[in-house]
Image (cartoon, rainbow, N blue to C red; front, side, top):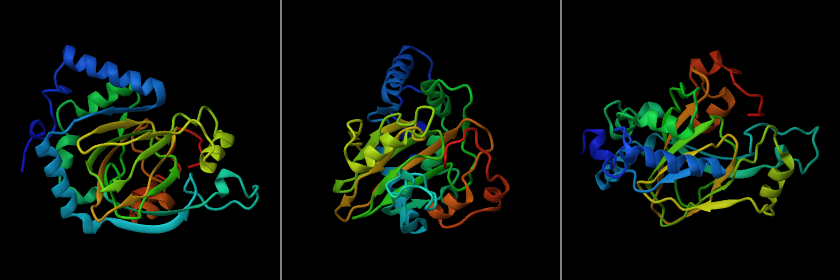
Length: 280
């Protein structure tokens, strides 16, 4: 198994660790994509050996994934009967998915080796052009793997954390497209447009098919998004690295329990600490 970030990341084509024209051009391209719709993709970010190593690591801890089958709205909140029945907060959809929590990945394993690799965080920060930029402090969610199996998907939702970085590791045979409505939150909740997305009548939805080894940078707190259902026996693995605007932020207890099946004392100690006033 590769041991260093240079074995896992294709630094020859994506020199994130080395200042110079190559890195400058890459950052400029990613910034342009983020400016356009809050989503950017670096194709072939991982080496073939990197893809193999991450897939093996994910497979090795797959049994640690928390599977959940429930109904949820886009905000992961409870029903509010004071609102009209067709309000987005009252629109609930079946959710079947699994997340492998962060504390299952060894510090010297390939996933955290990439996360801790020279220049990785700074590259993401430069692409996002954020002065206030911190790793998610949640010990269950700072770097995780989403594991999806046949029939699974993830219905329309907003992310709790402001910036999400993902690495596609392994695709299912079919399905699993990433669909998103760019920047649907613009200063307010924009419930009318959210309703159109949920109804399938919005003209703002884009479809993205990621391949193993692709790096995605996404402002998921502001763009409604989902993963389409999968088909075939092969699991879909996607690594998720999370960044936020404030230090020390962790997930809300209710949502943490939904996603990971457990909470830690830190989730209750820091409940309610957010830098914005959005619902979730």
